Length: 137
Image (cartoon, rainbow, N blue to C red):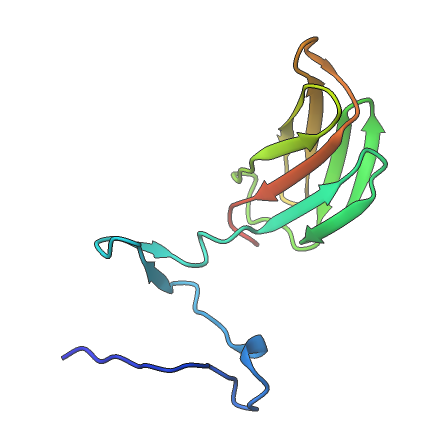
Protein backbone atom coordinates (compact mmCIF):
# COMPACT_ATOMS: atom_id res chain seq x y z
CA UNK A 1 0.00 0.00 0.00
CA UNK A 2 1.38 3.40 -0.92
CA UNK A 3 1.10 6.34 1.41
CA UNK A 4 0.75 10.04 0.81
CA UNK A 5 1.82 12.95 2.98
CA UNK A 6 -0.11 16.22 2.56
CA UNK A 7 1.45 19.30 4.14
CA UNK A 8 1.46 23.05 3.59
CA UNK A 9 4.99 23.71 4.87
CA UNK A 10 8.07 21.56 5.51
CA UNK A 11 10.44 22.84 8.18
CA UNK A 12 13.68 21.50 9.65
CA UNK A 13 13.85 20.00 13.14
CA UNK A 14 14.63 23.41 14.65
CA UNK A 15 11.46 24.84 13.11
CA UNK A 16 13.38 27.58 11.31
CA UNK A 17 11.80 26.99 7.93
CA UNK A 18 12.89 25.18 4.82
CA UNK A 19 16.44 26.52 4.66
CA UNK A 20 18.03 23.32 6.02
CA UNK A 21 15.74 20.76 4.41
CA UNK A 22 17.75 18.39 2.20
CA UNK A 23 16.73 16.27 -0.76
CA UNK A 24 18.59 13.01 -1.39
CA UNK A 25 20.62 12.78 -4.59
CA UNK A 26 18.29 10.05 -5.84
CA UNK A 27 15.07 12.05 -5.31
CA UNK A 28 12.73 12.09 -8.29
CA UNK A 29 10.01 14.46 -9.47
CA UNK A 30 6.99 13.32 -11.44
CA UNK A 31 6.74 14.91 -14.89
CA UNK A 32 3.83 17.13 -15.88
CA UNK A 33 1.97 14.31 -17.63
CA UNK A 34 2.50 11.97 -14.69
CA UNK A 35 3.94 9.08 -16.71
CA UNK A 36 7.65 9.91 -16.37
CA UNK A 37 10.01 10.94 -13.60
CA UNK A 38 13.23 12.91 -13.55
CA UNK A 39 16.08 13.00 -11.05
CA UNK A 40 15.80 16.27 -9.10
CA UNK A 41 19.53 16.74 -8.47
CA UNK A 42 20.52 15.93 -12.07
CA UNK A 43 18.06 18.53 -13.37
CA UNK A 44 19.42 21.44 -11.32
CA UNK A 45 21.82 24.03 -12.70
CA UNK A 46 25.20 23.65 -10.99
CA UNK A 47 26.45 27.17 -11.79
CA UNK A 48 25.27 30.38 -13.43
CA UNK A 49 26.35 33.97 -13.89
CA UNK A 50 25.57 37.24 -15.61
CA UNK A 51 28.55 39.52 -16.19
CA UNK A 52 29.67 42.34 -18.40
CA UNK A 53 32.85 42.57 -20.46
CA UNK A 54 34.60 44.24 -17.50
CA UNK A 55 34.08 41.08 -15.41
CA UNK A 56 31.51 42.73 -13.15
CA UNK A 57 29.10 40.06 -11.93
CA UNK A 58 25.41 40.97 -11.66
CA UNK A 59 24.39 37.63 -10.25
CA UNK A 60 26.19 34.36 -9.87
CA UNK A 61 25.97 30.94 -8.28
CA UNK A 62 28.98 28.64 -7.82
CA UNK A 63 31.28 31.03 -9.71
CA UNK A 64 34.32 32.12 -7.68
CA UNK A 65 35.91 34.50 -10.17
CA UNK A 66 36.32 35.53 -13.78
CA UNK A 67 39.38 36.51 -15.81
CA UNK A 68 39.48 38.53 -19.02
CA UNK A 69 42.06 36.73 -21.20
CA UNK A 70 41.86 39.19 -24.08
CA UNK A 71 39.45 40.09 -26.86
CA UNK A 72 36.32 37.94 -26.45
CA UNK A 73 37.99 35.30 -24.25
CA UNK A 74 37.05 34.79 -20.60
CA UNK A 75 37.90 32.16 -17.96
CA UNK A 76 35.49 31.47 -15.09
CA UNK A 77 36.45 29.49 -11.98
CA UNK A 78 33.95 27.39 -10.04
CA UNK A 79 33.53 27.79 -6.30
CA UNK A 80 32.78 24.05 -6.10
CA UNK A 81 34.47 21.99 -8.82
CA UNK A 82 32.66 19.78 -11.26
CA UNK A 83 33.13 15.98 -11.01
CA UNK A 84 34.57 15.82 -14.53
CA UNK A 85 34.85 17.91 -17.69
CA UNK A 86 31.72 16.34 -19.19
CA UNK A 87 29.27 19.13 -18.42
CA UNK A 88 27.42 21.52 -20.67
CA UNK A 89 25.92 24.94 -20.61
CA UNK A 90 23.97 27.21 -22.89
CA UNK A 91 25.54 30.63 -23.42
CA UNK A 92 24.07 33.95 -24.32
CA UNK A 93 25.68 37.32 -24.82
CA UNK A 94 24.18 40.71 -24.13
CA UNK A 95 25.65 43.18 -26.58
CA UNK A 96 24.80 45.98 -28.95
CA UNK A 97 25.92 43.87 -31.93
CA UNK A 98 25.16 40.43 -33.28
CA UNK A 99 27.31 38.28 -30.96
CA UNK A 100 27.20 34.80 -29.52
CA UNK A 101 29.16 32.93 -26.85
CA UNK A 102 30.48 29.38 -26.76
CA UNK A 103 32.13 27.33 -24.06
CA UNK A 104 35.59 26.64 -25.46
CA UNK A 105 37.53 24.63 -22.87
CA UNK A 106 36.04 22.57 -20.05
CA UNK A 107 37.93 21.60 -16.89
CA UNK A 108 36.74 20.50 -13.46
CA UNK A 109 37.82 23.76 -11.78
CA UNK A 110 37.05 26.27 -14.56
CA UNK A 111 35.88 26.85 -18.13
CA UNK A 112 36.59 29.28 -20.95
CA UNK A 113 33.92 31.21 -22.86
CA UNK A 114 34.65 32.78 -26.24
CA UNK A 115 32.45 35.58 -27.58
CA UNK A 116 32.26 35.99 -31.34
CA UNK A 117 30.86 38.58 -33.71
CA UNK A 118 28.39 36.51 -35.71
CA UNK A 119 28.80 38.54 -38.90
CA UNK A 120 32.59 38.49 -38.97
CA UNK A 121 33.38 35.24 -37.10
CA UNK A 122 36.03 36.94 -34.97
CA UNK A 123 36.29 37.25 -31.19
CA UNK A 124 34.79 40.42 -29.70
CA UNK A 125 34.25 41.55 -26.15
CA UNK A 126 30.72 41.04 -24.90
CA UNK A 127 28.72 40.33 -21.76
CA UNK A 128 28.49 36.55 -21.38
CA UNK A 129 25.67 34.92 -19.47
CA UNK A 130 26.11 31.22 -18.65
CA UNK A 131 24.31 28.30 -17.04
CA UNK A 132 26.14 25.04 -16.30
CA UNK A 133 24.57 21.57 -15.99
CA UNK A 134 26.48 18.46 -14.94
CA UNK A 135 27.77 16.68 -11.84
CA UNK A 136 29.47 18.45 -8.95
CA UNK A 137 32.53 16.79 -7.42
